[in-house]
Length: 255
Image 1: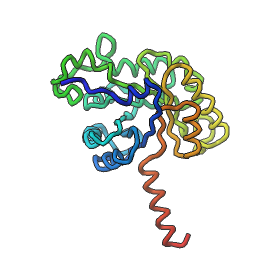
Image 2 (image 1 turned 120 degrees about the vertical axis):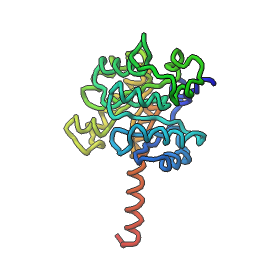
Image 3 (image 1 turned 45 degrees about the vertical axis):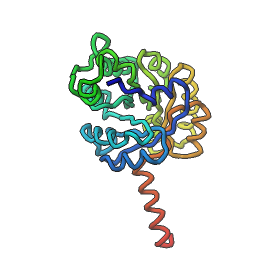
Image 4 (image 1 turned 90 degrees about the vertical axis):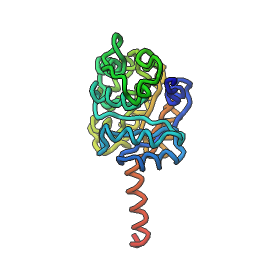
C-alpha cells in the first residue's frame, strides 16, 4: 500500500487557489454533505465546536471520494492532540494561535518522528493503513501539510520569522481573533483590521509560504484572493444554516 498523496499540499506548492468550507457541526453526515458541494477543501474544526478527536475519523472517512481534501484544526498547539489527529489519518493540520518562532518550531516537531521531531510512534493506525504503508515512519512527513494561524497583531509583526521555520507550509489569518487583539472585538470588518489583513497577505506570499484566511464576506474574500491567498475559507456551516433558517422564517413572518 502506498502513502496517500496530499492533493491539498500539492496545490499549495503549485500556487493554485483553493476555496474551502468550515465544518463545525459534529458527525459524518454534515461533513459528507459539505464534501458534495464543490469546495476544494473542508476543514473539520475541533477548537470552537463540539467536534472532538474521535469524531474526526468518521468525518474524514465520510468525505473520501467526494472531491475535497479534509483539513483538521486541533483545539491547541499541543503535541498530544496533534499526534492523535495524525494517527487517525489527518494529513493537513491548521494550528491555532501561533505567536512566535518557538511555537512554530514546536508545531513542526509535533508532526515529525524522531530524530527530526517528537511525534510518538504507533504502527497500527489509520494513517499507516494499519501497518500496510511501506516505510510509513520514514515517509509520512512528505505528505503532511502544516498550516499555522497568525491571528493577533503581535503574530502579524512576526510573520517573516514564523514563516521561516522549516516544515511550515502556510500561514492563515484569523480575522475575528485579530480584530479582538486590535481592540475591535466582534468587528473583523473594522477598517483598521481590514488594513492589517491587506498588508499581511502580501508579506506572507513574499516569504514563499501559502497564505490563507477565513472570510465569509464574498467581496472581501475575493479581495484576499486578489492579494494572494491560495487557501481561502468562504463559509462556515452553522453560520450558513442559521442565516438560511432566519431568512426563511422572515419570509413567512413578513419581516
